[in-house]
Length: 76
Image (cartoon, rainbow, N blue to C red; front, side, top):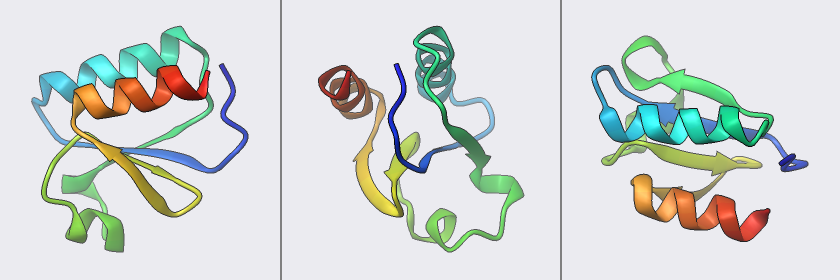
């Protein structure tokens, strides 16, 4: 799957849901950037209250494993 946008997934350390979302993105060959909220100065990382979080074209599209998976499957 290729989402033709700037796709970024924000994750955290020891986050099982984050790992599952990233594994799904790899499995579907989606183009994405992974950003660990603990290792960045990104303004997005400072605003997030739930991870994983999916940002597409600088817009928060979904957060939490269930919502992100729904979004990704719908976009497929």
